[in-house]
Length: 139
Ligand SMILES: [Fe+2]
Ligand SMILES: [Fe+2]
Picture: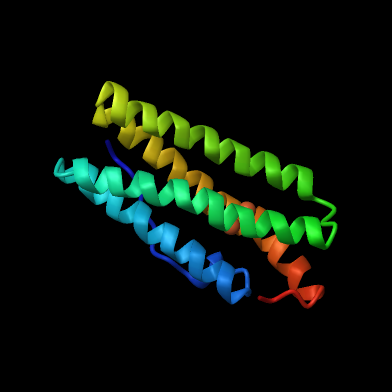
């Protein structure tokens, strides 16, 4: 499957160091996962990535959501819905990898996760980052 990968760039940065660092880590993991699937040496890396993504949803999304709540972020509902969409993709990813063991489908879901991620940080998270910076909530 042809998948377009992009390099990390400053376009993805929200200006909040903790948020940028965590986004960068997810970005690197998705690249590693892509390479593992392409090389079909992937079982272990896929399993590790799934563990990472599960933790990521709890910690990174949790951190963003806590701050949205704390500062009564006006776009919170929409942002939460986007996080839920990611969680749903992650459930599908688990299913394909652990149940059906069809890596072609896993690769498709990985591409969708990647696309979601790039769109989300460039729009939704950037708006949140700007809001939090304005509130002085940088860490
Ligand atoms: Fe984020
Ligand atoms: Fe987010």
